[in-house]
Image (cartoon, rainbow, N blue to C red; front, side, top):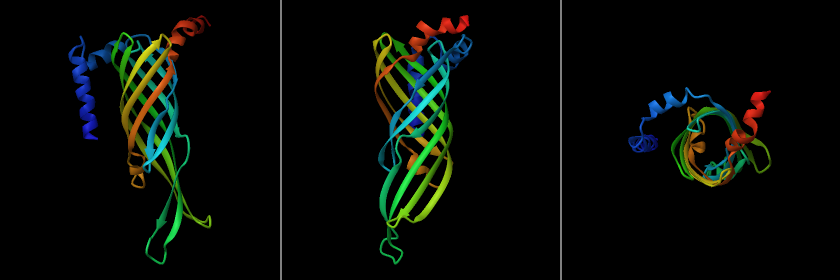
Length: 218
């Protein structure tokens, strides 16, 4: 975790060194601007129990000059993560178990644009919130051997880069890490790298161009 925090501060330092204002000055200036509404889908790829996992999310909030976004959202696993393992191997209690892992969480995001020039944009989203998860284990006969709900605090930090192909159409990729904090049960299962890639629509561009003035008139 210390390495990631160090990387974040190093990136901020290098970018802000060439800027007129440091990050704190930027926050003070842009948060005084009139915000616009912002909405987007926010999916990412990750791992749970070393198995590939897709996380689907939706978020909404305010954008300040396209530089800072303060957002709230909800995220959940697209599919239950399952695994098969041998419990108490080599003992009289040995049996094959089938495990199911799930989680979802609510999160608040501060999305800070580090670089925005021409068609390129580099952003630093930092996210935290509150999550719920569960683990269910059954034996080969379908009997429940273990079931537990748990709570955790997600903390995510990443770097996202995008290239604007058209004014409203972008290609992007990102990489980061998700920490599942304050869960003694299975938080290590949900702490894992996250990565994104793909094409997307710029919802903010459509809002500014077609909907913002209409909503104000009403």
